Image (cartoon, rainbow, N blue to C red):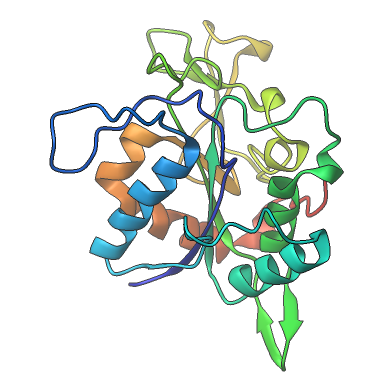
Length: 230
């Protein structure tokens, strides 16, 4: 089923793995940024008949006043059913408050039910797609920690509104793993988080499966402790 999808990301974060130009075996001389991953994602969405509703590379909003940017983003997000957040190593500016950064605002708006022109937009389904860093590693956000396949997601390294909407099922499915920290409690199943995390290299080959999962989770929004503001 085709979905309308908004993508939230840090435009200039260059601490990401280099992408090769389509159709070539060469590495581009232009440093890869999170924006290049958006272009790659948009191409995959198009092939799978989904509708990309995010910012195009030739329509940067950087030169507009904050009020204009907010209005344009509202227009783009409203009417979408899925928001994909690209997690990159330097997506969070440590020198700015979260209130002064756009990604938390985009997530907050995506999580709210908004009415506009007599139409109501429901809470979007959401995915957090983790990009590999310049060394091809995901360790800044996700770490395998034991032979059982348990992993630790470093939610404390990202925006509060992302962290608070992960592992937030009201009645979580858990099991005990003696090799796992935090009392050995491990979340299981495919519904542990409203903002469901997945690595880029696992997401792209199974894009439709993960988008459908996010949509399914959004149908059960009352099962989650949703935090809609940072």
